[in-house]
Image (cartoon, rainbow, N blue to C red; front, side, top):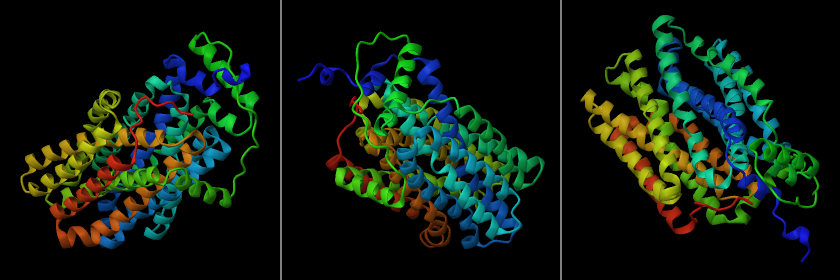
Length: 450
């Protein structure tokens, strides 16, 4: 065997570097800001539903499209940008996602009616839908292996921050201006600033190797070694391969490759994303309306929902502390069904405001232990050339389910079954998914990314 083939690879070097806040930490912070805007935008749907229903005299079915158009756009964006990122690179992809989101959010704020509003929200969602899969792929590929579980789990701390900011800002703006359009415009300036900041983030060396750009990959790796102050011996890069081309045929081929790679893993990833995030998005989208319908004023309902998301920050901290000790599968097996159960109890005590708010906080805590661990777990199940695509398609499935939630929940399940049975039904789906995970998918704690 030749000496060159026994040397550690560039990917091994990146994954064994020491953690430095000024190096990998800056990428974590910048990537997390995109995550924050994703949370803000999704959460905003719940606050817009009661406001637009009043302004445009929408019934439950019409109001449901406020959330559905945006979430379906995110679903399309999640699979499209995951695949695009695997072809054009993480850096270009995650800059374009926020740029598209910003432009069409401004247009959405100027909408004259519900049709134009939904069209612009769909396109804005398409842009923002790529943030999570692209950011997770990029941050995961720069993070040292022994820190990866905690760092990827901590990425989700940006979600409750964004969701809580949305709730607090929405409550303040509605109380002071009474204008829903300002709720949308307030997001755009910081989003554009993040686009500018992201230009300083280097491209993933794992992607550059895969794309047949070894000189650029070597330069990035050498810069990382130098900036972290690590002592590294000789290492190698694989032989350059032909750079992949972007086409619909390639996107379809990547989807097919996900199932050929391991159909059990892909089935588990999709089912976990669909069911756990169905519970969360369903609660997030309709919670302000649920609370308003039981007698809460708009500002009080908005602040109660903001409390539900704010306590999630503690959940993310718990997830980061537990993920490398307990493992991904055990945490998901416990917190997924428990989050749905807490919503069932919330619905049963809804006529007792103090008890209802308590169980709303319990839900916000538990679900935000589950979600960051879910993101970490699925991002580790696939090899580098499928990581963005694998995560993106799993995210797409969850967003499609979430996009249908406003229609199914608001016009069928809630009116017919009532809240307790509706939440119990979603909890049963989560239980089926975690049983499938226990049987068919491996534990990824401490594994090495290829």
